[in-house]
Amino acid sequence: MSFRATMVASVLALSMASLAVSGAQAQSITQALTRAYDYAPDLQSALLAAKSAAENVALAKAGKLPTIGASIGGTYSGSLTDAGFTDGTSLTTGLTYNQTIFDNFRTDAEIEAARAGAEAAEFQIRNTEQNVLLSVVQAYMSVLSDRQLVALRRENVTFFQAQLQSSEDRLEVGEGTRIDVAQARARLAQGQATLDAAINSLEISEATFQRYVGVAPQSLDGSHNYSRLVPRNLQAAISEAEVGHPAILGAKAAIRAAQANSDGAQAEFGPSASVTGQVGSSWSQPNSPADGFSGSVRFQITVPIYAGGAIGASVRRANIEQIRSEVDAMSAYDQIRESVISAWAGIQSADAQITAANAAVAAGREVVEGVIQERDLGTRTTLDVLNAQAELTSAREGLITASANKVVATFSLLAAIGNLTATDLGLPVEVKSAVRYNQAVEDVWQELRTIAE
Image (cartoon, rainbow, N blue to C red):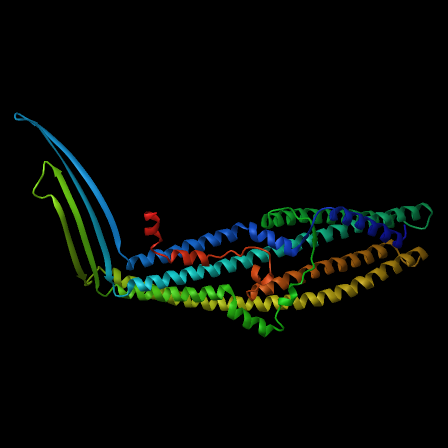
């Protein structure tokens, strides 16, 4: 079989396979990202963590508000004596009121720390969102490139089968040698092994895809229009990342929380004042002179003098945590900057590799066809044909890998600058956020209204 006939047969086989896959619903990168956003357990977990952090605001604000309670109790007693049986009942009701009216601004610091913590948790949602979406793109392109590699290596096996048959035919007519046949058979075995390896890799890639997206991959296409979100140059990308990346914004919120915690710890050294009120009534049968209404109000000021070193240790620990939060922020800046530069370089490298691979593939096709013709004329050997095909296959695999790397590097850059979010990508989803939940828990009187209802 000639080289052209082999290529035609391979193209027809690939076309049939493409038609078979296209029978399933097409699945673009945008569709995969959309489904993964709604499905991702990690993103849902981050949302719940943010809601949990928001509750700390309500817990902190409770320190400035009163606690009010009601009580009711009853007693029945009886006694049997020589004079006969006597019994009695009593009923008491009461209301209590407790409130800290001054605590050296410790509660204010706790509220600020809780709000900063809730803000940091909201940024963590955005950071998790980016990580999830980037993982989806990586899994998507892994499946797509592995499928292309399987098709290429299957085509390669077909080519080697044709060369083996050609070598055997040439041997029968006395134009070839047994060495040619052995070399073709060995190269066919090697091609089959690489095909099996590609199929195994594809199965793993499809399993990873289903883990993130929630469904098996269908007909995939690596084209997208998100390159428009890439900054015009590297410096612009770094500047955008330093301003808006959720990891950096979260680190800033963590610094605010640590500063507030330090203020709260230092406030422990100051005085505090509280007021306590109580009103109640009692009724008994038979009647008692103590029956009626009673009430009391108590005001108290306390000043810490010595607490066994606990207050000092608390302040020192808070100061250390504040310094650590600033160090973590510096680390976040460095990591984000590194990620931006790495992703930018990845795009440039992939572009260069694609250009080189396209040239190598174009030249490789001509070389293979020419070597086959020369082999048929007796100036080349079967080994020359096999080596030329191996170089062409290597160039085509390089093109597949470089094309996938270009897409992954593009989305990696978007993630590095903080723009790989559902909002920035325009995904048709309900954006996961705890902002409204945060606003709801700020309503500290909701609990009282719920009881009243």
